[in-house]
Image 1 (cartoon, helix red, strand yellow):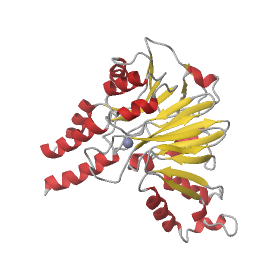
Image 2 (tube, helix red, strand yellow):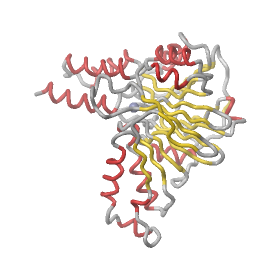
Image 3 (cartoon, protein in one colour):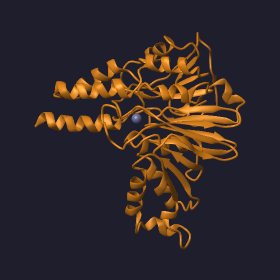
Image 4 (cartoon, protein in one colour):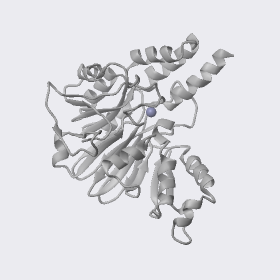
Length: 348
Ligand SMILES: [Zn+2]
């Protein structure tokens, strides 16, 4: 009974991703190149900037940099903003995103579209909040939502719950909350979106090998191409040849990273009764469906990316000693370009 219970909890944990991770920040630009500080959205949150951010029209804000599942004090769950020519696009919408948007000066009505890499909770939990707050504050401008299998059901389910929602009465007469989201569920790699400022491509990841073999669930990377920059957001993935091709030559690779050793230690510390079988399932998922620092380095080197931003940091917790040198050093064993371990609200 206990084994079954632990397995269920574990499946939820690993499905939500991995296991939490300490807070802090660590920069390493090749040998050691100092980064310039940029404007600070709040006293508590300091933004860093890569050199390109000073002159580029396109910028990336790492709104949330924590992996699932455990809540973190200093890292919201995974979300990013890409801004170009005054426009804002969101990449993933993990828990805590709205607070980070406020700190970054992104208004509720600003994002034109949300691109969800996959349907795990640490990438989607803030989407209902974003939609609900747009209804509450009379933002009637539609928002495009791109996501893989499951996104239509998630959005429709939430809209069902909004029916009769009293705050929707503050919206203009005749406004139907169902007209707010324009859902684009996709299942294949390829071009998702294109306009005069940006093109967005998707590439399927290797993230569900161990956990849900045969499932319709998929995870995707996104490649944003603007006039001045090309950025890939990895989503959650294990090592993937297709991701190497997809990210080849990009200016910025925003990529997940996890440390399998500390993941196992944290797993056992938080779940002392977990069976060896359950631990094995979790570790298989972490090892096969996520990226270690060394694997990130191999990916970045093979793809010849111009800079790496580590985000979606797992595992650990906010009170652990700062282990971040290990992450960057692991990447640098295989990759000689600039590597930054992002904090929430960093700007690149
Ligand atoms: Zn995740």
